[in-house]
Image 1: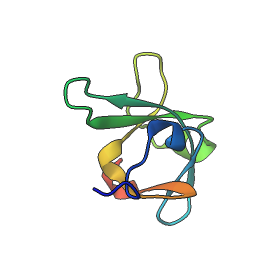
Image 2: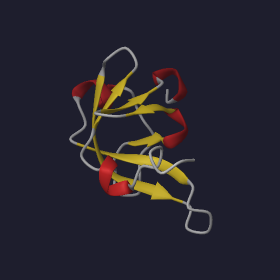
Image 3: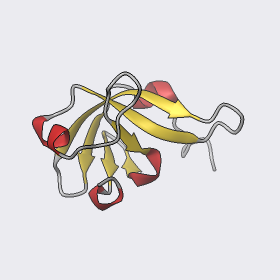
Amino acid sequence: MTDEEKKYSKQLMGKTVVSKTGKKFGEVGDLVFETNSGELIHIILSNPTAYSKKLELEKSKTGSSLIPFSAVIAMGDYLVVAEEDII
């Protein structure tokens, strides 16, 4: 991975999370990662939309909606996720 391809967690915070069809889920509130390997596991949504609340997403211990990081297909101005991978 080149330096241009690397994304730092602070660059992801606050980005809008959308599906590849353009449906908005909310914003990146925090990240859950494996401490030993550094592998990203989940995105914790902040400001979840009504649409994302209806999906019955996995929840954190505090009740926040979680999106598996493996569902992320693109990162830029938005974080784009494959909706079929999260429901």
